[in-house]
Length: 220
Image: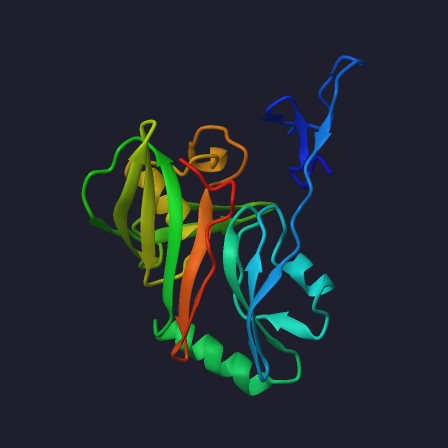
């Protein structure tokens, strides 16, 4: 449960299972919401993935399906699945992503005030050991992110983020590279929070546009 990120002491998430705590410590266990169906037709299933659930864990609820894309564990929102026996759908989806024919829009909360729209065009190099980590590196793969500020409050900014490419941790690494890591994204220098405040808001695929509304905890 600690590894799943659902154990709290007071308002702080418990991160290290080996830490010594007072025997009178009171723990709070948060429930992980179940995925909900946003769209289902023929072999295509589009879900609203809850935070703190891995993409692979979705298949426990839908064992006849396979993942067509992935989201990080703490990223909520729109995710695509297809029936296992429909290889044609899988090929079409891979082709659409590769040709940058899929519109992908996210919401993110960062500490600090971003006043203007901007485009982040920096190559990303990803190292995958026990845990993936992406860095801005000239030997990396091209990556393009467009950000638009939507709201400001408490010295934080809610951003609309549109990505053309889909590199590992692209949004997280790009926002950190301009000095505005995502709130809760401690791996990339963000301040500690209840979660990583990144949400897959909209996807447009095969002329199907699907929107996952912000979760109730996604607040400035």
